[in-house]
Length: 597
Image 1 (cartoon, one colour):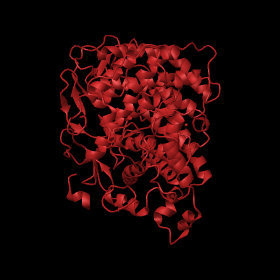
Image 2 (tube, rainbow, N blue to C red):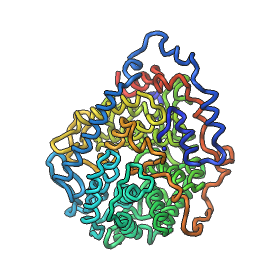
Image 3 (cartoon, rainbow, N blue to C red):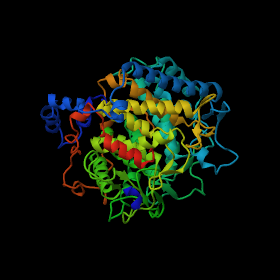
Image 4 (tube, rainbow, N blue to C red):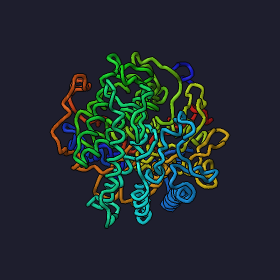
């Protein structure tokens, strides 16, 4: 094996998705109708394209993945819905108003008040009914309007953020603030994607709660010489005097979507301003040699404490929000930063053959490197990195997404879960637990929306059945402590209901309002539904964000112009829209690389 010798709306059809996505959103001033027209006209299906499907014997990959009956799709949709409500109903029965459900003991879980240093628990749990809030929009996506209304009223009547709870700013932002904003928008959306789901007596209470929470998070941005926020804040008293001065890149740089929407909803620039200032501060600290950022930084000195650059933990959603912020707000600067980051990632993190579906050599793999020189730092990847194929889809690079996704799916097939870290050189997990993370499911869903290829329905079915078999316990679904022996931990994180179940359900529900609505939507990094709306592209204040020294400019991109990456729209062969997304020879190669045979 070559790797062992080196240390190294979403409501569109087929692979025209990446083109239509940008046209529908009105993005990319120099990339548009001609490219997509060319894709639709010059690459229209030819009769000869279908003939090759019937030539020769079909191998085991073709036989397994080439079709997915509607009856089976309906069954999987029902299983995904049952999975969500088994976890949700038991949370409401045994745990609410506490933050999480312990699904083995059928009890609630809140902050670890006896051990404040237990950040694994206390960063997330704020004693504010986390799981209920985090699942609000999922109830609508699954079609339960009455329970959505009941949950909204419970949040309004019972939730307060006036708590002596120290929480991580990032987690409170994506899980709580993002969900409150999403639910508020869906309640008040005049376009009614889910029908008229408004409450007669609703008076913007969720928006007021979101505003209150955001105000309590603002002290994290004070007393920091760089503008990069403190990682944790007490909701009642602010930042502790003994708070650490180190934070991860994703934690500090993934606040812009939620803070930006809040600012534009209430007409107060403060929240977007502090979040955008943090992004710019991190961006200005990137390496002059590689263009990469590290994963941990000192918020006072601006020195990199962690110099690892990768796509997983500590980095993932920073890149995600550069692109999604551009899609939502239309701020050119956001996409320019994403485009420059993407080029640096391709130049320094990517190894393997040049093309996903052609040629010889190892399949593409994104590794962890030193941000300053691009040298490989270790031989593991982590499960959070499985989000990246979905982001590649949003950027139009569907070919690369197909190949990267196939590698993570192969790991899932081997273990029936994704280990938190997988050592690609040793073909073994480095960190063995799996807390029901959604990233692989999210990418599977987005790739299915891009291709409509039945392969991704089979992937979703494999994931769904694995969760039913390996994670289901008496009152919910439990974290896998060990992906090999399938031993469990008594914890069901809120993102299982907010994201994992939501993406599984949407994967099999072609008729979901999100897929049928004339609106286009995007998902936050916690899976909350946000419409692509003109009102989020309008500011009720003067431009307070002039370009600052060090912020990326047009000239930093490879061709010196601002254009959406569309190079891969024309590379996806017409034939493969009706066969496997990745040729069998390459699927077999990846399966071999992860030790499946």
